[in-house]
Length: 248
Image (cartoon, rainbow, N blue to C red; front, side):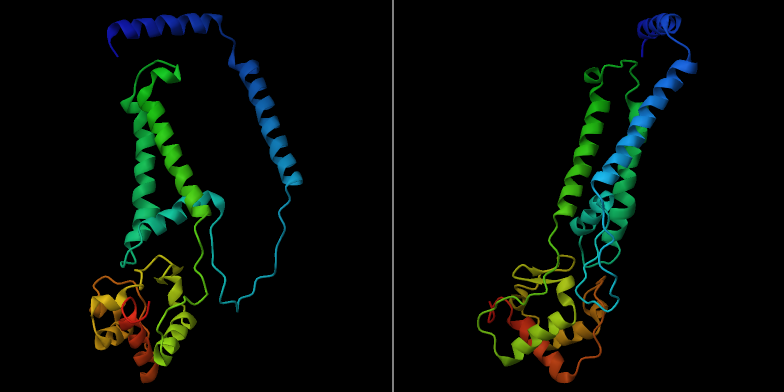
């Protein structure tokens, strides 16, 4: 702000102060009117759009997919955007790095755009920052609200033999679809297994990876599966090695 702008600002401020009204009771009176209206609106909406308690919680359920309240949908979507083998990257990005970057942007805006101009169209930095941050959060909130839930249905694969079918049923019975998907069936936290067989890793690698994922894939967030029988390991490895090649 140069000297001419400072002088003009001081002049306008002095004129506004001379012609203005005192904080008490005028400003307090207006605040009370707006506050009363907002509280009445919230109460009215709560009465008009009642929210039921819902069904009793069943702690034994295996098909419940937890979802956050609507005001956390943008964080929920960030966890999906930054999906990775590492268990820490999505969590750190969604709950610490990205929210803090947005917070720093909002805090820094008044220090970057120091113009005394009050007309919003004459404040391009402040206007663009507000629009970008709001649009970003609105988009992530929408995508988080409409994100598909992991499906418990078995994908239809051509060419499945008995061992591979048993491996597919075991995979879904063990909850693998919550993180992985096959042909669009399942979650998106872990990598897709649709074409896993085309990587040519071999059954021994697949069985070893199931038993100790971190040993075979550095930084893997997958939990080890150590309670399967030798036959079950063989069935799972047969399925995984055929996905995308023998089983499509």
